[in-house]
Image 1 (cartoon, helix red, strand yellow):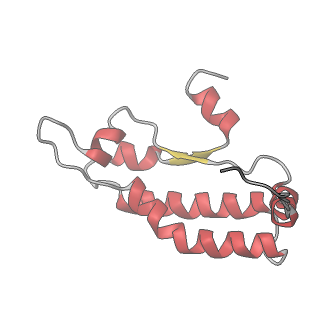
Image 2 (cartoon, rainbow, N blue to C red; image 1 turned 180 degrees about the horizontal axis):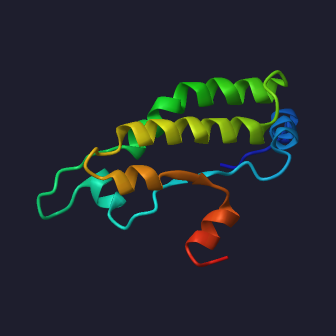
Amino acid sequence: MGITGNVQIVLDTKGLDRILAALEGEPVRILHDGVHYGVYQEFGTSRGVPPHPFMTPAVEHIRPAMEKGWKQVLEGSGGKAIDLVDKLARDAEAVAKANAPVKTGALRNSITVSTPEEFGAKMGNG
C-alpha cells in the first residue's frame, strides 16, 4: 500500500527570528567557583562526604525569573538578552555565595561569573 498525494510543509520562522534578533552577541555567562574542592561540596564524595549543594539551588532560585525574562525579551518588552543573562548570572552568584558551606570561606569567595573568554583564561585555555 503506497501513500499518494502531496505533502506541504510550512515552516514558520517568526519565533526563531525573534530569538535570533534578541540575542545580539553571545549571551553566555558561566557561574563557577575557583577551588578544586567545590564539586565535592556540591555533590559529595563516594567516601561518605555528604553533599552541600550551593550552585544547584542558586540556579533553581533564578529559574522563575529566567522564564519570565526570556518571555519578555522575546516579546520585545524585556530589553536585550545579554542584559538578562548577565543579571540572572549575578543573581545566581549571590545565592550561591549565600548557600556555600560556611566553613569554606575560600570557596564562597571564589564563586564568580565569567564570560566564556574570561573562564577560558582562568582555566589556562585562553
